Amino acid sequence: MGAARYIRIEAGIEYASPDFIDSDFDFRRYYLRVRGRVRLANLGLTDLFGYVGSSDGELPPQRYFIADYHNPVFFKMAGMNTTGEVNFGGDRVVQIYAVQDFGTNMFRNSGSKYLKKIPFGLTIHGGAMWSEFTREPMLADSSLRQAPTVYGEIGFGLNNLTPFLMPFNLAVNFSWQLTAYDTRKFAFMIDFKL
Image (cartoon, rainbow, N blue to C red; front, side, top):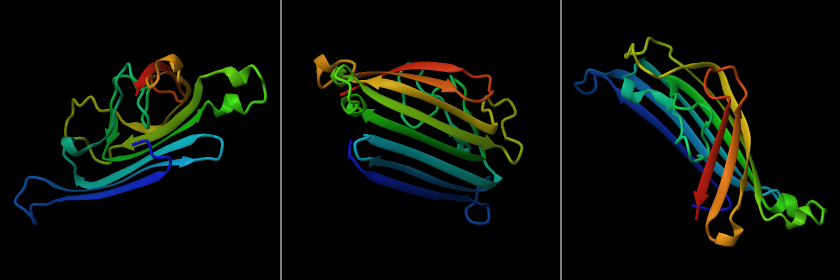
């Protein structure tokens, strides 16, 4: 909620077995999600996101781990932007993402009298993910794809593009895929917040 520093760790275990409760399912699902924000001196805010999930047994499709695509228009922190409308996932997944928001500090501290006047902020973002099925997926015609080699992207954004409309903050974000997947090589997104 806009705090300058925080860390949130969430861990979960799901267990389904006909030996425990009468059920058609027999699986174990484990995950760890970490989200944090730190302030680095005069460099602004760093947002970090990490997710690890694994399972054993016959994981049903509704419990697959998914690294899904984003709204094709609005930028979403802590997620892949170049995947387009492709969902990646499996019964094991790893995803990391980082966003460094320099704000206007980079320009203000530049030493250049011209750059100091720029009212815009700068962000750099990037991340990677990996997923696989260790067993044959239950849905043969599933649109869920695997990322057996690392899928990565990097990008930058300009924010505070509407300083004359405070407290509204319009931003533009550009992301490039760093890997050889047949999804989008480039994504342009906007972000609008209060």
